Structures are given as C-alpha cells and as structure tokens.
Image 1 (cartoon, each protein chain N blue to C red):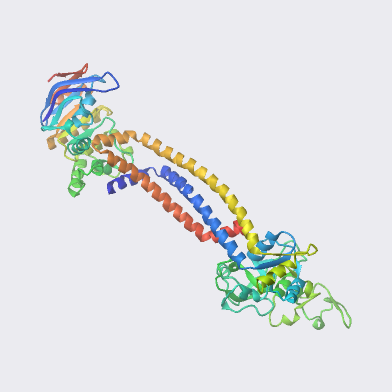
Image 2 (cartoon, each protein chain N blue to C red; image 1 turned 180 degrees about the vertical axis):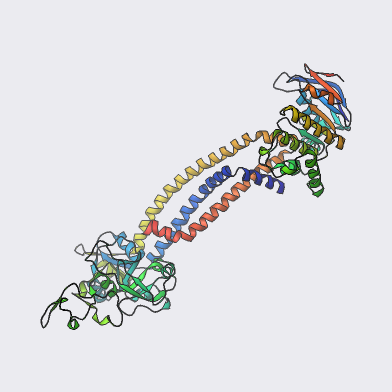
Length: 222
Length: 393
C-alpha cells in the first residue's frame, strides 16, 4: 500500500508547486493519473519512486518511508521494488533485446542475474510475444515491440509497484490496446500495483481508479 | 565490475567506427614520441657502434661525412677515389695496419665491399658456413643477405651493372659464394665481401678472355705479331671466374694506382694515431684522415637538436589531441545524458554510472595501449632497416 501524506513539493527554479494532503493507493490497485501538461503527474511518479524528494510530507510504500532513505538506499529500493515504463521506451540501442531486459541486473548489486531470472525473462518474453527477437538490437524493433521489451525490463525484478509514464503515448490504437492488455496481464499475474500517467481517456475505464490533477491540485474522481 | 565491463564492451562494439577512430588517435599520440625515441636510439646505436670501433679512416679530401657513411655504413654517396699508393704509404709509415676498402658496386641492390681478409679479423667476424674468399671471383655474404636471398655456400651471385644504359660498360661478374658470415647486427649483415682484385675485375680493370694464341677464327684475330695480338670485340670475355679460366684473368696498368674509396687505419697505439693524423694535416695533401667517432658524434648532435624540435612539436600535437579526445568524451557523455538519466531512474547509483564510464575509457585506453605496443613491436622488428633507410642510405 502506498501512502502519501501532507506532501509539498516545488521545483526551486520555477513556480510549480504540488500539494497532496492525502493519497492512498492499495496493493494490486490499477490507478490512472490524468491531467493537463505540467500539472505534476510525472513529478508524482518521481516522488513515489524516490527520484525527487518532497520539501514536506511523507511517501511510504508498505510502511517504508521512502523519502527518509539515503540516496543510495532509495536507488537500491527503487531498482528492486519499482518498475518503470517510459513513453519513449528508454531502451539502450547498443544492447540487444535480451540485454535490455537484463539491464537493471547489470547496473546494481541489489539484483542478481541467475538461471532463475534468465528462465523468468524467457517466460516474460514469451508472454509478451517477443521471444523470437531476443538477439535483435532494439532499433530494428517496431514501436509496439520496443514497449513490450520495456515492460519485460520493468516486470523482470518482480516489482511490487509499476510506474508507467504515458506508456502508450507513442503507439497506434491497435498497439495501444495490445500493450495495455499485455501490461495488465503481467501486472495481474504478479499482483503488482500499477500507477499509469496517461492522456488517453479511452483507456481510463480499464483502471480501478482515476486520479485527475488539475491546477496542481489533487482531485480524486473515483 | 564485470557487468560494467560487459555494458561498456557492448557500447564500444556497437559504436565501433567511433571507437576505432578514437583508439587510432590515442595510439598515435602515444606511439609517435616513443617511435621517434626508439628510432633515434637505434640510429645512435647503429652509427656509434661502428664509429667507435673504427679508429681512423683515410680517404680523399672532401665531405668527411660522406667518407664515413660510405666506408662504415655503405651509403650510396661515393667519396672521391684514392689509390693503392695510399695503402703502401701507411704500411711504409709502420704506424698503422691499413685495411683497404673499395665500396662502389652492388649485387642485387646490396653493396659489394672490396677489401682484404684483415677486415674480418679487425671486425672480429666469424664465418658461419664455408670459408673466406681465397680465389678471384669468390665472395663472402652477410647473414641477413644470405637469408633474404636464400643463398648457400657454392651458390652464385651476379654483380649489378653500374649503369644499365652503358652498353660499352663492364659485364656483370658471376661470383661464387665461398662463405656466409655469422650474424653481426651491423650493416655488414647485408653486404657482399670480395677481395679487392675481384672488385677491380667487376670494374673491368682486370679481365679474362679466350687465349688469343689458340683462336682459330680469323674474324676474331685482327692482327698478330711476335709481341702483340689484336682481336675484334668478338673475342669471348669470361663473366665467371672458375678453375678452368682463372689463369686467363689478368690486370692491365699499374696496380698501385688502382682505385679505393677509403682505408681503415688501425694504429699501433694512441701515439701512432696522433703521428699518422699529423701527416695528413698538410694543405697540400689531397687526402684526409678522420676519426669516425667524432664525425658521427657531430651528426648525432645535429639529429638530436632536430629531435628536440620534433619533441616540442609532438608535445604540442599531443596536448591538442588530448584536449580533442577530452572534448569527444565530454560531448559523447552529453549526448548520452538521456541514457544516464534512464539508468538513474531505474535505480542505478552514481558509483555504478562512474564505473560504466570508467570501464569504457579503460577499454579504449587499454586498446590504444595494446595497438601502440604492437606498433612499437613492429617498428622494433623493422627499425634496423628503417634507420638504415632514414639516416644511413
């Protein structure tokens, strides 16, 4: 369960201010965050994951207060417990599909790349329909395939929380549905919590709850 | 660390063109000063080792450097000739042992050194295969030359004509290899040694032909008297000296005026050397006596002055190159800022990012080091010839 309490955040160099008095997200819940550009949706994801630190308030995941960790501990916690999916995939073009999926394991000691992980990666790739593309470089893949690789990368460490920042923003309608299906399947299977920032109102009915950010002010529309 | 190296390796392999360019630039920056230093050290070694072991050199007045370079390193610049009289003059003085040198001709682009057997004794050379030259037309070849041309004792070697367009010139002489020298690590390894008389035969001062008294073809013998037989050019000239025709070889004119390019003078002692040098001081003398060591030291002094200048240029180029490489790295990391942000978002810590970048730089530097090392090894393998071509020939 994610708990945000009396959170105050602002960037020092502009007038942006985010204020969230209280927000609770339950375990295995699927949340969509909507709102105009610059309303603080991505900032919220960064605050939950510990990339940004609030000036005031608490962000806790399963009673662990993330913003009280040291920088190094926050990173270790993040890589082991939070999966990120980005709008433009953020895959490394010099690595093939397989190496991109294993990438989190190669950049931290908190995760160990062993036979079990490799076998899980194969199962995930199969579920996502990219098992035949494991040795291909990502620049040779289609947009849909790239996002599937990014989902595999996010899901492989079995995170309890998935943060998707406009994960379907760069996809055509057919791919959008397919990718979302694949993501939901995977999230359901692992019983992870999903928080997805989206501009796509057609997809909102598939989420358990929608949170609308308007004028930097939090509104729960569920 | 292995994961960082793996990721760095994947990045380098993916961007191989950029990496190869970078590695080549870094290797060049490291290679150039080392190569220059290595070549100059080798040139110093080669030049000085011969010069210090050759006490005095007598030759025609003129460019003393040409005299030394031709006599010691068989360079193609020929000094003016002196005559055999100069050898007699040194013998008569009793001050030194003269070793005549006649370095003018070539065989398959290798110098033919006309000298006496004293040369081998003086240089402390041993014959590995066969024996020294004993008969007119025989030669001893250096170890490297024998390997290079795949020559064995008993094989033949043809002298090259001085001028291909001189139709009236001397015929090439087919020499027989009587011995192959042990490796000497000097220019002698690529030389052909013959007796002075053989060198004069190559020049045409001595020759062999059909016995004119036995010729029956009237078109060859133009006139015949009791003391003189005149023949036409149809008479058969021998181009190879063997047991059968050795007797027919003879020299015309006064042997004391036969040419030499230089004489190595080995003085009895320092006092004899000083006296001998004094005898060549007169301005009327058409010959000079030089200490090769002094000439080579002067030459090296000039070379090393130029080296200092080149060092300064290499240093400036190296600084410019290092700055350029630094710029390339910093631009590359700026271009990869998005990638670095992504791995930060995923949870990678700063130390790991530093490790990743360090691993890439390490691989590039190591590869440059290896390339530079290999290039230096190749240079070292050929530097003997490179130095000879650059500084001696």
